[in-house]
Length: 446
Image (cartoon, rainbow, N blue to C red; front, side, top):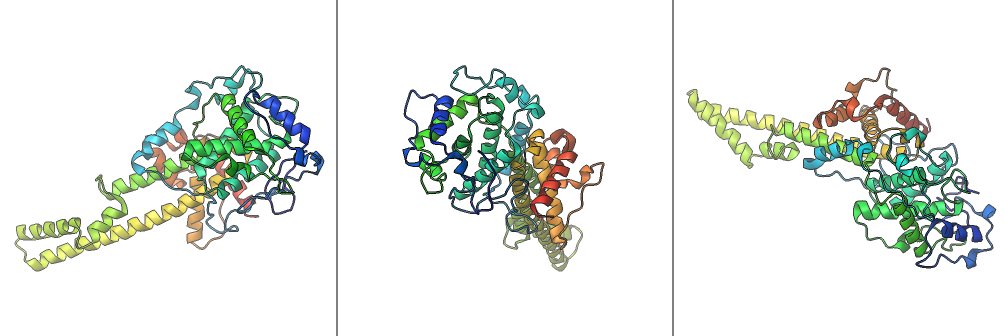
């Protein structure tokens, strides 16, 4: 029976009933091109004896029981820090990528639903995958999904993956569940002993698609061992589960996620800030301001030459010109300091928002929101948390209804960059922000 982690400090271990796991793979996957895993060495392990928290996994493990939230990385410190790598993309393409992320997914061609009866897809999978009725989509039971997503976070951290990769993997898991046929296992698309294999397959596919990862199958299967240290799955099992997921989703892997939307929002804000700092020029940002402030820089010499020319026109001497040049350099130094402080704050906001995206992936309440809405909520709450930390305040205040969009300066800036209102880019931002704040406070143990 599938159950959340116990108090033991470990991540996830699905129950292994020897015949059930073997037979389940045969019923889920095509079996004409290879053999399935042979679990003769562990056939004496009863399903009831399997412990969800018995697997050995490198790195910090998620061990939250039902009704609990994992502690934020940094033991609730303000602001929170992400567990996974989070690097910003090139700001020059961020606005275009954010527009692509915002394009309505319902207008995309629906994935082709395979007719092979061995692939667990329902006849109405196309409608479920189109996103027209998100609230009506089939989902894993909340404890199952939270435990799986938590284990996927730990597994991704142990393999050095990036946050967008984890978000893509969780998205694959949710989409697979949406199109999965209700069968003999009830509300889950596979027996308990295969849910961890499904999670590994989604991680493996996402790492290949998002990062071009060269991780071998054994690097994933080594994460799932039983209480005796024996592997639960073979490489062939993982490969076949990957094929099952791909077929069920019609080989359509790319969908926007909160992580990708967050990346493009932050980069859009950085791009707009750089453009305004440079007066529309190409260099922009801290680099341009520092170059202007440096006496040896071309921009600094230009400012001094302009001051000399202005002084000569007014019949003033070199001393006045030197004073004008010093004033220009002083203004440039002040601009450089302000730009540097702004970028440092934006980096802190980005880290806090990434940690909140990680948190949102564990809660199925955010499945009813658009990815851009979740990203904007994470960015808005991150701003408040970072500013509260800077002011030496440990608490955050809930948003006062009606939601004041002006408080979301970074999210509003990203919306303006793509030519949309904040409500247009992130619909239902107020309720999403309230849900995120509740999850954040619960994670901090408030």
